[in-house]
Amino acid sequence: MSSPSNALTCTHDPQCISSTPRYAPNELEAAASMCKALADPLRLHLLLYLAQGEMCVSELVERAGDKLSSVSARLKLLHNARLVTRRREAKHVFYTLADRHVEDLIRNVLQHAVEVSAGALHPSTIHRSPNMTNCSETSHEHHDHQHGPQCGHVAIKHEGHIDYLHDGHLHHAHGDHVDEHLIAVSATNPEACTPQHACAAHPVDHVHGPGCGHPAVPHGDHVDYLVDGHLHHPHGNHCDNHGPITLA
Image (cartoon, rainbow, N blue to C red; front, side, top):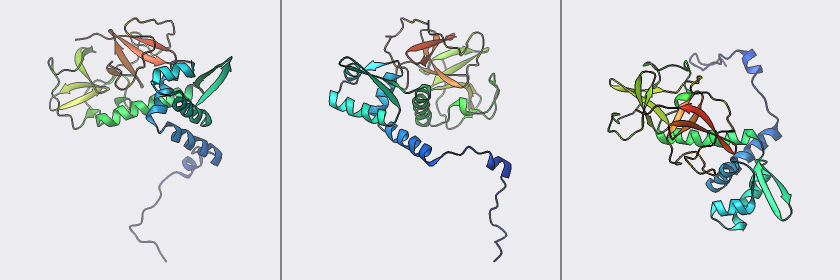
């Protein structure tokens, strides 16, 4: 029986399909277990604490403000999912993230949650020139807020004009719409690791992320946080200094 004339046909290049990454069933199962372990706000919060560095169970209990048995059960599940590692020293058990992949994973999923709650994709997900600031396909849809000096959002000077930080986006009012901008990686605003950076603007144990109290700033292909006039990028047990931002 011949297929209908309007039937859908595959137009993919066979060579492209053959080069698609393939994973073994046990690898997919392990990834699924990790996703299940992440599917709890309290476990996710423990991972955020551990992103600052190794901590003992008693310290995590104090920070979580919960019972020892509850925190231990969450840590056991995270350990079984291979998201954290542990070691014993005398009577204390210390936990740390399994590797950098885990840190990237939790920060990416949290940032995506911020983007979804804001109702639009983050500008870093749009393919464009890193220095793009002109009007283009990067306009922000469904944006009724009128940005201006009294709008309540942090205003910054950006490449000769004024932009506004709004729910993790860098907005520029342009006629009847709002453009999406980002801070380009440059000598002024680098993306390098600076473990020597010590900032008294917030406590050492402060965790940057949604609701942390600091405006999120799109910078290159990642997200930084504006603290005391400069960009902070959470990185392990410290914050990298990604350069100054001039407030308007």
